[in-house]
Image (cartoon, rainbow, N blue to C red; front, top):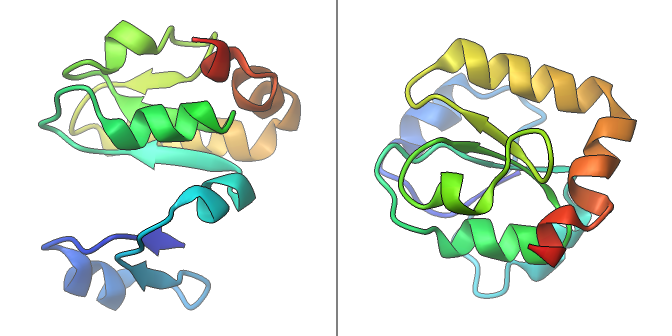
Length: 117
């Protein structure tokens, strides 16, 4: 599921597979965060993202670009994964790692390391 309305939404919709749902803007993201396995924030310009903090508060495992305030709240490998900005290969590898390693996902997110932070 992809939440929100982005300028690139039309291009994403054209390239996304049939298993990707575009939800659009929502007022309460908590049910989506609680149902998710991984939160990914690929902003290349960001301060301290409230979306990131919200995801962490639910105990969700996060992958974020190492920009803005993200490195101040994410300790790579402890409470999330930091990846270099504009590096699709690093994003792909981080996603594959978390999708195939439930124990790591649990340790990084559901174990509440992010929530405690």
